[in-house]
Image (tube, rainbow, N blue to C red):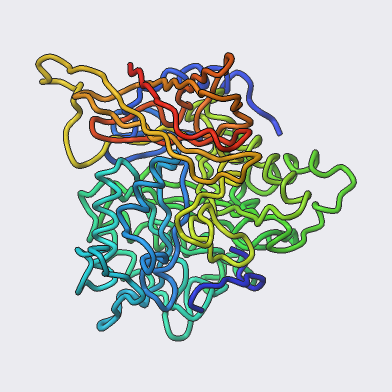
Length: 506
């Protein structure tokens, strides 16, 4: 994030129509099990081990970079329940920020609740040991992980990738240690080399002390030297040729000075973009706002995707959504990122900031109780969510060697999360109760009263009289055997109780 303005409450334009048409048609036919193995790039797309395009549609879960030395929220919940919830909401990747402090001898995580059996398997572990467990469970759930070297130490963000206390040699050594640690674990698909380089960091100036592009090449090659399968995520800078933007959000220099690594097809460029709850920028007061925003994004980073140079990942974007300007900004950005239903994986990649509610100038997908979902904020992202990936905990039930396939079956449970008389919110959990993976599902119920759905997220619906039929969204139709997905909705009036629900699977 734009760290000088953060008030975190934590412990401290050309679309290439021919190319788009061809790749869109291919993306629309991508199999549900895309994402297996390590990934590589091809033009503007990220491909899995078998060459299928994938879309990163994820969430930032921060804390390892703070003085807690571990993801936040474990003081409230079990880590597995949070990862399960991320998956159920349709996020398929977790970006995990960390600082180099977690590599120091004697660093231990704090503020973890072990009562009532929560986080039991994390007791006694170092920060890296906890990270191992999180990576392992995320992989079992079919989520990928991107590790983000956020800060040199937990004290705060740095403009450059090194400080007097944490020299470049330490930065590179620790990146290599992580790449070695997770070698062979394809849940970790890549490393974000350093978060938000900013002035005096430059791009292409040739000064080895400040040229971030050259530093990214040195570090990226070091990582690939020990684990050549990883993606290397390279953020932008603040200023290029006198034009300034968000910290880490200016990738204008890529056109003239691309990052060149020793292993081909490993570079993904990453931009950060924020709204007025983080800081004001000139484009927010442009009379044409928000129609001016696609041109702004094209200039700073979107051209890399549109010119088929490389994939682009918006590693951070977020807002409190309190102002009308911010609401318009988020709607415009989501549209710019390209809806999955139209473009499939031929799209921009993203991880929203943040899962945590305790990011002071953006808030999170979770509310302050670390349990309840901000359904309005999450709803903005529905069109750009994407399918999850094969879990690492078992084989594909429908793959080669499966003697008879299996029976598709599902169950659904309906629960009312809040009821204020004139209206209510409810959630439905769909569970794959069969022996083979689902590709789609449909849930039906009939209210005994006059209730009507007002809005629904993570599913689409039709209502005829008092009977509602909800079908999966594009990102959550695929559910492995034993897995689950959830959707929610608001309706009126309240006081309707819980109807019986039926689930049909395919």
